[in-house]
Image (cartoon, rainbow, N blue to C red; front, top):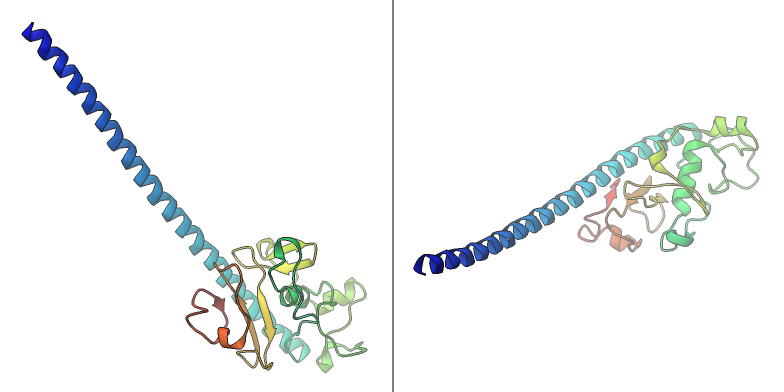
Length: 211
């Protein structure tokens, strides 16, 4: 009887210990999963920022080449244009212009002098009416696919987060630089474009920008 009682008691204790063990294992797995997800999310953000930085550097170089070729930095024809659909909260006039200015694929988004039919020699982009003109206007026609997004609004140059780059020609009252301002809001969904905000280091701490 005593032997059987101890045997049953041991079995009960054995079952309880196994349950506790199981709970401990589940807890450890949950903690590891949370840590893994956190590391994965962080790695994704770092990767997106690196892609954005690389893309911004490539655009800056292209804009300098544009100025050397046409005598001035490009200016959006519709700087306050807003996107449609999923891009409804984004200003896209600048990014549509960037695509055309860099690739030479169209020029309706680039502000041109009235009645321009000029060539690069007098500092004005040539109005493209065919592929020959587009080739003459092109700064870099083979942009990486990851930098270009085709949307209902047209072709846009996007950052590593899949959002349109923001651009303003310098010299304007709301511009930081006398040359041009180009930036990505990075992790932010949207932000104020006012000069006060752009000059606020705290407000723009997560932005990726050329100033």
